[in-house]
Length: 370
Image 1: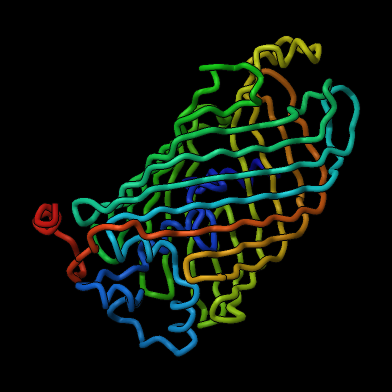
Image 2 (image 1 turned 90 degrees about the vertical axis):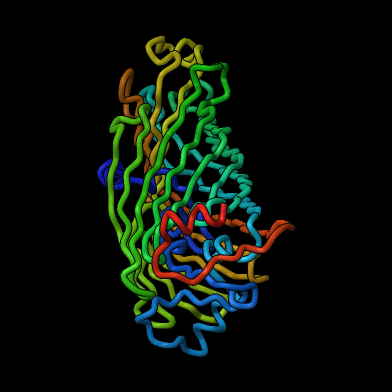
């Protein structure tokens, strides 16, 4: 069941790659496309995300933009450079897990993620991104279990956003680095997944996204998908895209309540002695695809306009470890979980970004601002 859901993972295949202020992956795209460019610093501060055919914003919407702005909008206004940090910790309780040796046992999970990005505008229509990320998943499994005791990634992030109009955005991102159980795989643990996605803004209330991801270590190397974001009214929003579909309710200008899912998955290489230590030599240096589905309520609270606390708690519906090329698929049942993250965006000192207000950006415009 988990694998079928992940078939539409697409650009959003990594649950953390495109994490934005109030969502993961694909809101990184749709919020970029919401932004309207401005001609001076005062206009940037009061920037609206309305399309030309949108109605004036209500008092609540304007206050929400001020107290809990789109981080992606902030990236496209202000100074030419920005810096962004995200720290997250999750805990999943004991879930009944197939250990692969004829036994089941309760396995809990601890997750830690640290990501830091630098972003720089160039050639007017491009936002170049680079940074580092470390992710750790620790599983309370016995030493002889086929379930890895940890799965980690230490990667560089190289991305590019290209906007050729206020309504169109293309995002390309690579994540070269090491994906392993930290048991000596060395250079064999080096991989470089790629994500590509396109967002189109129909108007301020409705956007759709489409994309694909490439990861040669997965069972399905190419995954494609599509989704949409619909602002029903000032308080209610539907995000129908992976990996974090959700319904949101704006309780206060700086507080959003959510009910949704978090669908995670990635591929890793285990160590050269992993199989020998468990009586399964065929699993030495094997690839394992990890998948997990969570559902539950949460909230997003902007303690400052660009410092945000995100919380989610609920039930992990299931997880799996799939050694699809060399061994078994180990399924697990559900368990409760909690997740807490802090997300912050900082303007870097430097020249203000001056972009003329135009519906489209021409090649001539781009090189004029080089």
